[in-house]
Image 1 (tube, rainbow, N blue to C red):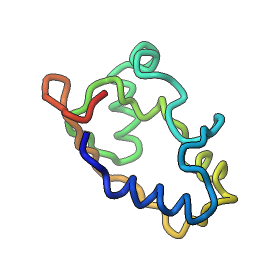
Image 2 (cartoon, one colour):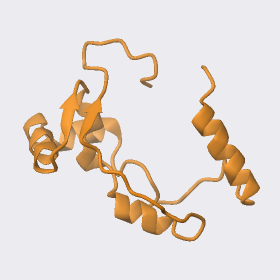
Image 3 (tube, rainbow, N blue to C red):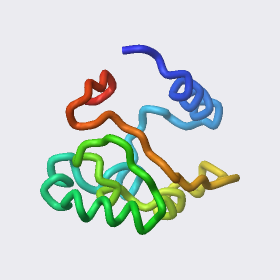
Length: 109
């Protein structure tokens, strides 16, 4: 697996701040509320498309296992980390491009 310069920098910043970059964060930390299989079972493609369209986000590619409705909302995640971080800017996506269901993705788990 190739190294990720962003992950390496994040780890270095965590260590500089006196945090353990390998420590586990109890929910409701960042990440999905449901696993991929559970998200596929709970949400339909039409529901995902409607959810994205209502927020003005264009999705290119992607399989149904990455439904955004299965993930925690950003304000909830930021609130959980309000102690160790200071948010300067919040970006809003307008497009997401991912490998499609029938495309090879070397980073997919």
